[in-house]
Image (cartoon, rainbow, N blue to C red; front, side, top):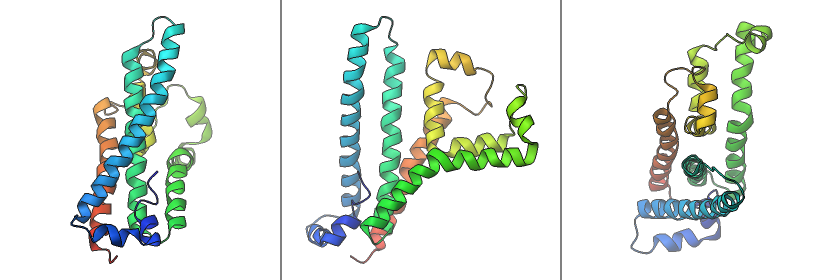
Length: 206
């Protein structure tokens, strides 16, 4: 949604026209961010909401609270990627490059991040220890590096708030794996890239 927010308008020349109006650059960034986040939130609410209603009609005992937390967490994860893509849109000079960077950051969090961490564990402790020993727990650095990934923070947030999953993972996670920590990480992934985008956009010569 947001990789072309700034760089796309700059390539078309419409950004200079927009900034010629009595509007601050901060308002442009924040306005675009809020607009795109609203579009994502509404689309997610409609998509999951309709699905939820259909499920609720046909299935008894639906945990609506758990389902609501899943929807809101999904929206927050989407907003994380909007913030990151807006950062690339402010930082990079070409629309195609911003799109590539946005796709790469998604691929990094979905695939590469956990593969790297798992590879380090195997290198340090051996594959038999990591995969076969049911009582073995990874060191704290692994859990810290894992939860920094916004996708992992999202997954943990959902898992810790869904009753049946929470019961299954009880006692298997470190003490700092809490819903509050997961929320904090996701909010930081929203706020920090957005602040950096604001700084870059304010300094950029349009």
